[in-house]
Image 1 (tube, rainbow, N blue to C red):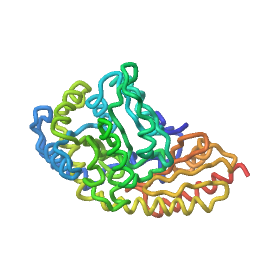
Image 2 (image 1 turned 90 degrees about the horizontal axis):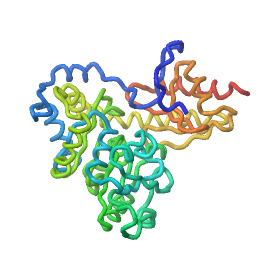
Image 3 (image 1 turned 180 degrees about the vertical axis):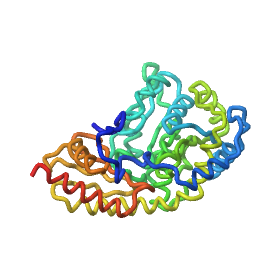
Image 4 (image 1 turned 45 degrees about the vertical axis):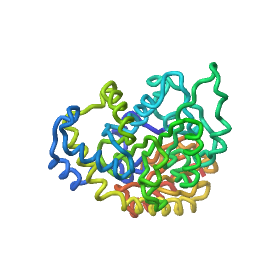
Length: 357
């Protein structure tokens, strides 16, 4: 499964179209200029004005009391688990959630919690499924303390949780004295696609974070938001895990630039994803999932190729995609891929799909 290659193969030709992930974006010239102009200080001592400005802005954007700047989204998730839970607790999340599949076993290794995977189409579960998974509160049952959702749902196809479904899940969790956390890696993709204000979409979350290194195009950084008490407690875990920074305002400036310039344009990525899906759907042997945001998944089974096999053939022609199963391929649109790149990717994948025929 070629989801995360350790190192680029130098024998391969240059990448012409990078659909591997929106994490592959690189800061624009204007973003780098904003970084160079950043006023900085010692963040650990509360002396970095650019990080302070970013945290204040993010708390206001998401309707929370406070915020904390961190190097990565995975650190946001892990710190949230560490803050909300105690060792032995159980977290409920979708069975394909990032915290289960893609964070190196962090919930168990760091927080000492188990994660119960819930079923549901498109990377989402509903309030009834959540309620059915609740255990009788007994001394020999793990305390169920946290419900986690992922917006957008990555492995579900980049789908957007409808607001009423999301709020019903949050209400059910709170009714059973559980806290709620949102993995908001691509939260702004959901906001743009659904035309729902960010603060409204996350109103039922006790904690939520936004990643700036995906569609928003920054080189580093994520911001975790919640109540003042939650962020105060989370800071101790930030310190313990080595997440406290010095002159981090250089990177926070890139995030502020992204908030100013790279949110509305996410609609372009969504349009390009739809164009890519239309082109791929015309290739015999590919089964394409209709995209809701910037992620396009397709199945290679009928071509006679595995997902890795097709990905290798495409990479040999300068097009990068990722694979998430034996036959499932993921292509991710972002600000470094234009419509011409989409057309080229379709041509390359079409040629690859016919290799074994």
